[in-house]
Image (tube, rainbow, N blue to C red; front, side, top):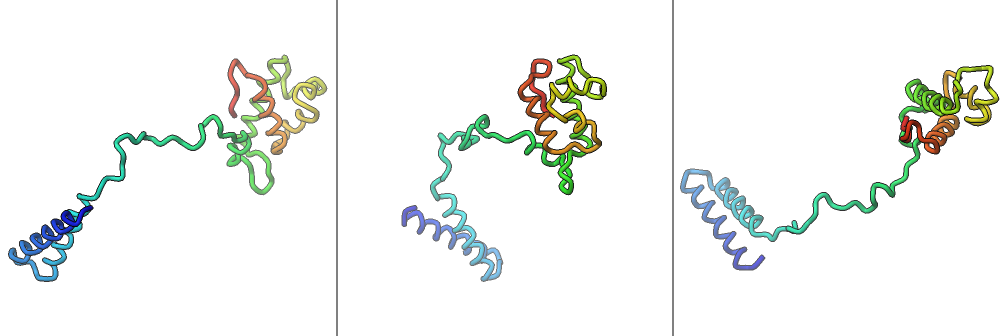
Length: 159
């Protein structure tokens, strides 16, 4: 901002204050209106900080595909903070994912006569862990890893 523009803004402020005083505004308020007018002129004359070539929205520092979060971290709200066990809604979804994985092999999670086959597909002790009312975090991680490695119906399952 040049000195000439600054002096012009001061003159405009003084003129606005003088006009306000002539219209019957009190002296202190007329000076305040003059200062306000001068400030508005100065603000209007300041150079813009926004470039016309600026892209919006700005590019993020990392591409979205580079950001890695585990499925368990995204589902943290579904775990009971006191016990670390999955709450009912998450437990139901994890069981459904395990049942879909077993259905590919012709097995049913609740079938006690085929425990050895189910444990061979899901992992040792997973059938009993998934049939409990509260599913431990390790069992959830294991089933999610199975869901990521095996496409259910041609797409990956997100519980």
